[in-house]
Length: 84
Image 1 (cartoon, rainbow, N blue to C red):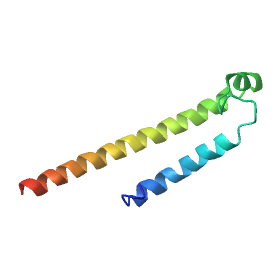
Image 2 (cartoon, one colour):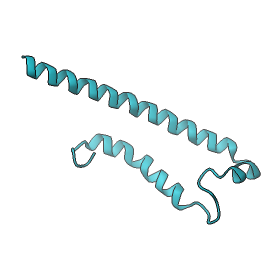
Image 3 (cartoon, rainbow, N blue to C red):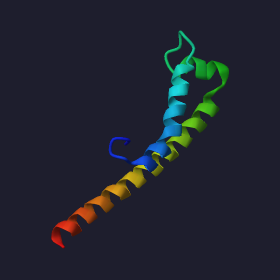
Image 4 (cartoon, rainbow, N blue to C red):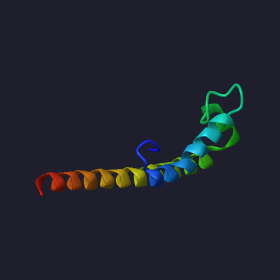
């Protein structure tokens, strides 16, 4: 995104990327990953992990439709410059 100078999209995705890196770095040693099944059920963290997953799902859906709109707009602009 930085190479193609899409600053808005980069700044929109920066907090989510930072959060994912933070979560990955803060995984205790010995765990399988951020969502270790034994840790989720033993500590009762299932509700908080589900909330986080739903927030990420909503953000990804928003980004998907924004990228789809941008792609269609670019294709239409490219088509109109070739034909007109």
